[in-house]
Image 1 (tube, rainbow, N blue to C red):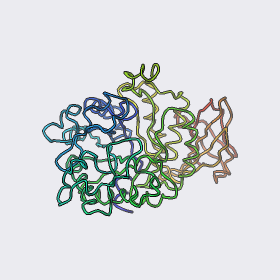
Image 2 (cartoon, rainbow, N blue to C red; image 1 turned 90 degrees about the vertical axis):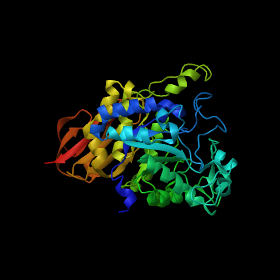
Image 3 (tube, rainbow, N blue to C red; image 1 turned 120 degrees about the vertical axis):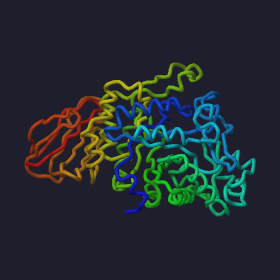
Image 4 (spheres, helix red, strand yellow; image 1 turned 90 degrees about the horizontal axis):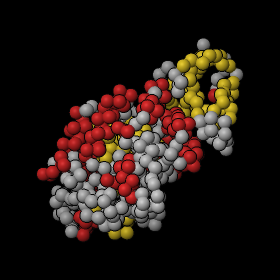
Length: 441
């Protein structure tokens, strides 16, 4: 097993600021969510606190709920982004994210950041030097390799002298800050630039090399995307997790589509290599959008639009498939249901210990998944009602490769429900799910 896989032997679990705070998250909000995680989620395995996009932009979120074209970014003398001190006061005086990372580490948690691939436009236009070289940022930039939805960066031309040195320099900085997890955006789909010989694929390789040489283990997460199955070999070689979807939100149609995506990627799941279904849009969301409600045409709902049944379905699929789990909610706002959803120890054990997960059957109205506990040998069975009305969903044990009699435990209800042989099933509410553990007598 590669060293890069050793730091993510099980799918990473944590919180990301995007779904609730968008590009405008600040230090106070990050620490409030970290404290909640420490008190309520850490005992269940949740550990990463990830600051998402635009943390170097002082005015992020003030002009639009998304991105300000050609916004000013805070940079150091080597063209590397640093936290905007008006939003992250502990970063003042050139301290960067180290004080914040230290506070999060003191809680027993790990700290992560989001970056865009490439080199900042501002660093290119000002011809800032690449640390440790005689090269300047304008000499390593590829002016035609740009993000379609964010204007902050140019791609890095891997053929240019100083290109690897630039990536080495930013990960050297992140290591000094104490970063444990890096989410790299506009990079997951290495076919995104088919006519560009300096594609994102080469930047993934430079990032991998930079992490390996920075002196600090870091989880590497790749974002949009989405990834293509033809490049699974390359993603497995270089990353710990990669998005298999564009941004996932609280929309049943998107959740329904995820069943197909998980089927495509099920064989690529292994220790250190995790196809990523994206964040869990539960609880309190879109908080920074509220002030833009009138401009956007009316009230913006800040609580998840998923029904409770749909949230159980989502959590069941993510956990049996073994996607990384990143909560999108503002955690201090959690209600009792959301907290229970995220802390069911038996569902999370399946997520941690499951192996050989695969789809058994899927139609327009139902889906069946199974996996096996690598430690105790129990068989997990997830039944999904994809229909808009209540329906019975079941499966023959022979389809699971099983014969004989089994004791059955309902993992969501956390109770024994008796013995089964031949077939197992139950009635499920619209868009609902059930997960069972089968133990042979």
